Image (cartoon, rainbow, N blue to C red; front, side):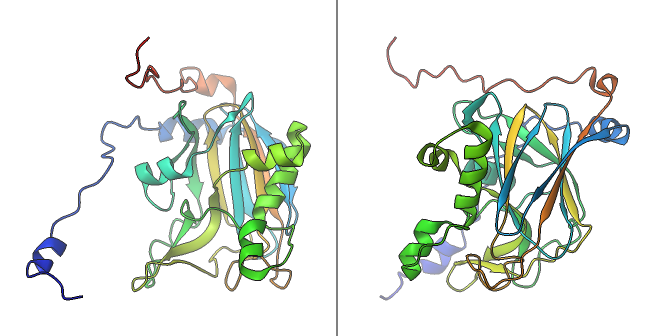
Length: 282
């Protein structure tokens, strides 16, 4: 098709940020850092290779995800511990903060709550930035590897995709059947995963994660959380992400509790203030 005469003019129109964040409430990172300095470790969980584990974090505590044995990507889900209907909303998080998260960015819950669930407070991969391919780490682009897409593309049954791993972890922690738990699993934060979009076709790509043993990302828990972390069957996701062939390693989750006095003036965020009427009568 021949482009219109004003094609270059149309392409040259400057972009506009969809959601300007100047009025977005800012996390008090200095307060969080002071509280973290005196925090004590209260819990530890291990997500085994090609499997997931559930964990709990109270509001005002910190949780850290660490690469222990070798390069490994993790898929993270978060729920309100008291109401599983409130869960991480990757799409709105992406719209507010961008395609990949870093220090000071927050994981937001879905409607009607739309409040911070956790805030990134430390990241040893913060140096990576953007590589020559457009790759960055800790994305909120990808949905999670799942057995349905795997079956669609290969015709095979595979039960260790991150969706299934997270389903088993949630079912065990919350006492849910498989169907209910699978429906509660949601799009993830791809911890340590290096991803972007190809410049020619716009396809979602992954490449071997730069994570190494000892690297970690840490969060401040804004509300009481139930989390689940899957050690992806793709390992470092340098080749494929639903596979028994990739080298896979465990991931460690630790929880740290600060001195209550350090957060004396802090309050867990309230749910979003929108009335919920949606313009309907009554």
